[in-house]
Length: 318
Image (cartoon, rainbow, N blue to C red; front, top):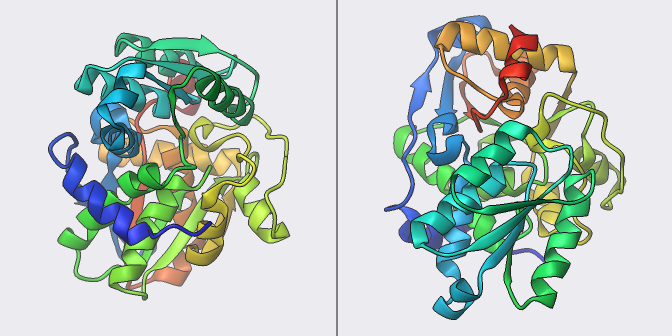
C-alpha cells in the first residue's frame, strides 16, 4: 500500500505544531570543511524526549478519537518510540502500555517509566515485541501505535522536511538513519514533493541493515541483527510494512557503515559540537563521511535523530 505522504505530512504539520519543537538547523564549520561542502545538522537530539519520534507518536495519538484515547493505547519500542508515546500520553492525559525487548537499553526504558507509562518486556527483538504488542492491542480493543508502519507516524516524522524547506532554499542531499523506514519515508516524501533534486540517502549499520537487504532482495526479509551502537535502527521489519514500498520509491541511495565508523563519527561530532548524540545519529554522520567526495560544493543535511545514549555506551566511545 502506497500512502499519500505529502497529505499526511501537511495534516501532521497543522495537528502537532503546538506540541513539538521546531529544532535548530545548524551550519557546521567543522564538517563543512572536512567535506568541502555546506553541511547542516538538523538537531532532533533537541526534540522533546531527545528524539524525532515525538513527532510521529503525538500525531498518531492526536488522530485517535476520544473513545480510542479513553481505551488506552499500546506501543512497542526499543526505547525512543516508547518514550515518545509516553510523552504524548502524558501531554494528552491518556494511558498506555509500552512493550520493549528484554535487551532494550535500560536508559531508554527508564525514560519511558519516568514519563508515566507502563513498560513491559517481551522478546529479544524489536520486531518480535511489535508483533506481540499489535496482537495484544487487538485482543484488548486498544489502539496500536507503530514505531514506523503507520501513515500518521510517517506523516509526523515528515514534518522535519517542512522545517528544512523553511530554512534552506536548496538541499542537494539529506542523510537519514534507516531502521524501519518511518523517518526517511516522511522526510523524503515531502522533500521530493517540493523539489525532486534532493538525493535522499538511507544510512544503516552493517550489523543491522534489514531494510537495505530487503530492498535489494525486493521483499521484506527476516534477518538476524548483530549488536550495534545504533540500537535505534536495529531489529527486523514488520511483515507487510508500508515503509518498504516507500523506501523503494523514495530513497535514492544506501550507505552501510561499520561499528568503528559509527564510533569515530560520534566522537568527532561530540568533540566539535559539544552535544550528546546516540548511535543512530552517528550512523548518518558516518555515512556522510564515507561518501563526502560525492557532495563537494553541495548543500548537505544530516539528520541528528536522537540524543539518548547510556553512560556506559558513551564511555566506550570516548
